[in-house]
Length: 205
Image (cartoon, rainbow, N blue to C red):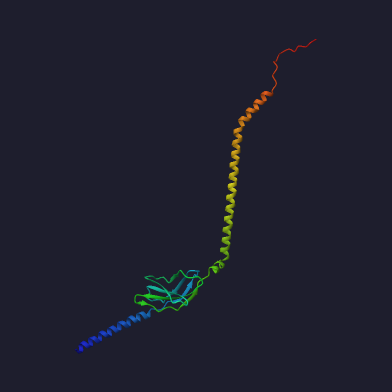
């Protein structure tokens, strides 16, 4: 093999090494997400938020969700997005979870973020943690519902009374002509006959 060929192969190998080093450097420059925080923790859901370094060529994210002391993982991955939050759903009540976040670029993924642990709420704690304003609102709603029921009952009763009055009034009105005829007949039978006027009374002397 000629020296030129050996030199060419050496240059090609050096170029490949340079490209590999450049690719590795590009991936290494992508920083892990920062300030990973869990918010809005509920019985069966939560929201994870994070930040990235300015200038990182991030096009998406990947989230690993795992129960503490359990090996099974859930992976949530999104690309072509600039969002910095993700909803975690279908969680178990009163359970500890571990969450990692990775940034995704065209060249690959960043290192994992620092693990974040959180515990989901209990159903009983959620009911007990209702604010006084919510309790007052619920109580006021119950009172309003009771008042509406009372108003409806009163209106129904009044409607029944009015209907009964109208029915009795119609019955009385229908019986009035018969009563008038009976009164006229009775008055004619009890009246005395009239004496003819202008007659002379005779007296025995």
